[in-house]
Length: 426
View 1 (tube, helix red, strand yellow):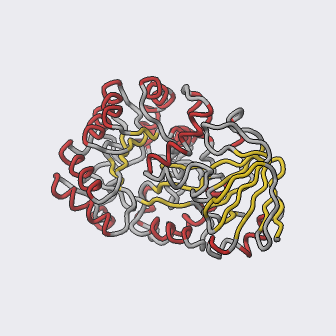
View 2 (view 1 turned 180 degrees about the vertical axis):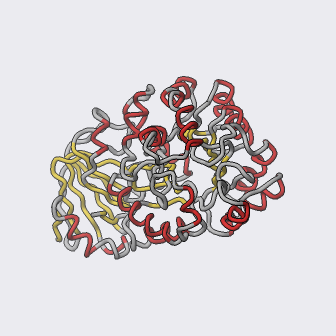
View 3 (view 1 turned 45 degrees about the vertical axis):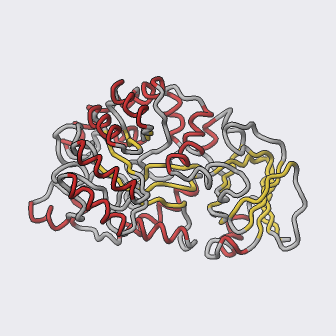
């Protein structure tokens, strides 16, 4: 039996696990308690056994460890499912330097992403959606973390977002010839062309389709935050993606843009700042999930007046700042399904768990916010039978914290142990 104490885990696993497949051996975890999912209470002392990256059993008490297995002893710690962030930008860091699109190679995004993947995993997030990147950068990260070459979470990657010409997500702010040179090739106009771009994204490796359904806060144009794509364009995108087995996530701020996206069959609304009752009703009727990204609004507000953003962007940040403090609470009151996402990259990676307190400040309780980042987020991904719980047959995506997060959600801001796909992250 190999023994890894809590304090021995980083050095041991760097050599034994990170670069090797999760199937190397059996890992037995002793914990003070286990929260299998938010519908259950913490157990007493328990043993979780992982083989080939899959959870095989959860047993009461600290069970004997089979010969040849590795033991991880987490005395005093609570095990729970790894957290899921449905909206991250691993390949980018905060800042308003839009001109860097013209000076930095796409490859640099992989370097930045490797740094941020590690920080994200160490913060307890074992699965993320990468919500828009340069072509191939997030896909390279996805492969690197899957194969254990880069410490980080499971990545569900969108690749480049689909946008309208001149809208949020399109390259703008430069001379026309530079805009054209930097265009990643995923703008579309009309239902037929939009369907073709979805197929192109699928062909090139997208796990999910990201669209910018409305104007945005951080782009270099100040034409408001309402709908960009038409209903026919969004319906074409949704129908085509679904025919390929892909879901669609839509950046959307304005109420009518949200309503149109929901009626068109878009799966998740990202941000949702100006959500009203009509838009909420459309989301409920169509099963559309809200991903509120409250940390994004806090993060950009922290940068005001510091020369980080251009004047047009600062004006938009100030315009949404008050609405950002209440819109999710309205959605919750109206019965909109809410899942966890932060927009990390707009603020520093690794601060993702700050979203929990912000969600609670708008009316959700601890069980609800933790469920939004585990079972709820897994359902939004269509992976509810693989991740989001500690249960036999599920991926061994597990974290450990001091205390009971259902009683005090702030303990999730200080994660002590992380396992992704059966690999222990330092």
